[in-house]
Amino acid sequence: MDRTFVMVKPDGVARGLIGEMVSRFEKKGLRLVAARLEKLPEKRVMEQYREHLEKPFFPSLRHYITSGPVFLMVWEGKSAVTVVRALVGATNPAEAAPGTIRGDFALDIGRNVIHASDSPESAKREIALHFTQEDLCSYKRVDEAVLYE
Ligand code: IDP
Ligand code: MG
Image (cartoon, rainbow, N blue to C red; front, top):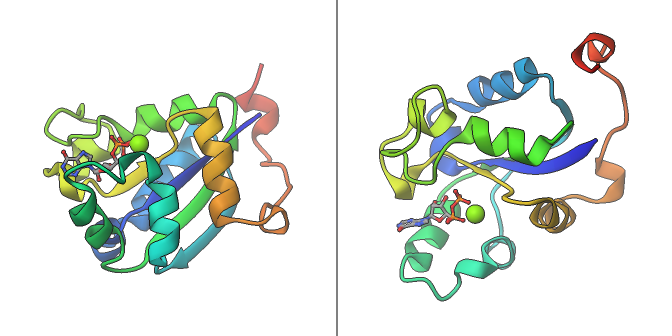
């Protein structure tokens, strides 16, 4: 089982899209193991997006991500990182395929409604950045016996 970190960004929260996004991951068969609504402190935004600190868009990204509460989640399941990135769609919503979250709910790269870890290594780092071991719940979905071979 893999784990991935997912975050509904402030525009997604403000537009009432948390339930829609959670529903898509639930229906796929993934298991929610942690979640929290929170306004991110600057320091954690810098750590979350550390590979983008020097990018020209970083100041606007930081402003966007701290503009309101975000909904932080950890999802678990087979190939969770890859599966969630596919459900989220391309970074630029104009290029994101219809049926993906960004393809269905966003227009602008600077307001793309959701974040998801891009690799198992990023997932591990991002989960540890936002959650403690005690935050991660251990349980089974009742349909897991038929979801997996
Ligand atoms: P990702 O979210 O699909 O992994 P990254 O390239 O890691 O995409 O960029 C992180 C976030 O930074 C994007 O989701 C988006 O919010 C923002 N971003 C990336 N590129 C641009 C840009 O060119 N202009 C404005 N914002 C950008
Ligand atoms: Mg990224």
